[in-house]
Image 1 (cartoon, helix red, strand yellow):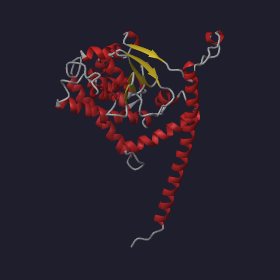
Image 2: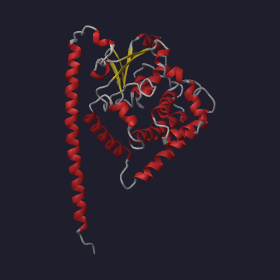
Image 3: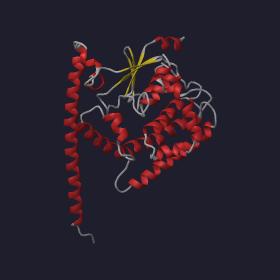
Image 4: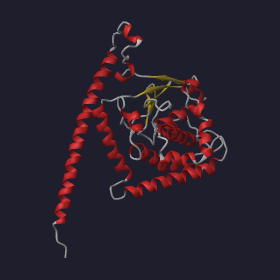
Length: 322
C-alpha cells in the first residue's frame, strides 16, 4: 500500500541539463534518473542551469519533501531511508552487494572525476557545467573546480603520475570484478537495485560523455558483457520519451527560454513576465555577479598563497645545514 501511494505522488528530479544523448549529462544526476526509472516512479525532470557547482544537485522534491545530493549519503540513500522507494530491501545485508556498491562509489567515481576534470581537454566538463554561463565566469569556475578536484584526489606535482596510474588500476580492477559478477545476467543480483542504477549511470556517462580517446572509456569497452548490459537497458532507463513516467521540463532561464534570432517565436506577441520569472532573473544576475567576484577573490588568494610558498622555498634554500 505504501508503494502504491508513493507512486501516486508527483515527484520532480532537478538535475543538470541533457547533453551527449543523455537525459542529464551529469555523473551524479544520471544514476538518480535511472534509479527512479528502474523503480517505475513517475517523475518530472527539471534542469538547473544557474548553479553549476551546487553540491545539492541533483535533488528530488515532492511538495514539502526534498532529498538533496549532499545529505544522507545522496539522493538514492535518502529516498530509501525516508521510505519513498527502496529497491535494496532484500540485498542491503549481502556482503557482495555492499562491497560492490562501495567499489563503484569510490574507485569508479574517482576515475570519472579524474577523467572529466584532469584526464581530458575539459570539453565534456564545459558542455555539462559551464556552457550556459558567460565565458569569464565559466572559465574561472572551471579552474576553481580543477584545483578542488586535485585536492580531493590528493594529487600534487610530485605524485601526479603515480596517482593517475593508481586511479586507472583501481578502475580496471573494479571493471573486472563487476564483469565476473554480472556474467550474462540482466541484473547484478537478479533484480533491479541501486547497484544497477549506479553502475548503469557510470557506464552510460563513460560511453557517451567521454571522448573516444578516453583511457577509462577504453578500459570499460574491453569488458563486452558490461557494455552489452548497458545497451540492453538503454531504452528502458535513458529515453525519457519512451515512457509516460518522465516529463522533461525546462525552468525559466535566460539560456533555456530566450528565443533565437530569426526563429518563429520572434513574430509572436511578447508575453508579460510573471513575478516569479522576474525574481528568478534578478537572482540569476546576482548569482553570476557574486560568483564572478568570489572566483576573482579565490584566484587572488591562491596566487598570494603560491607566492608565499615560493618565498618560503627561497628562504629554506638560504639555510645552512650542518
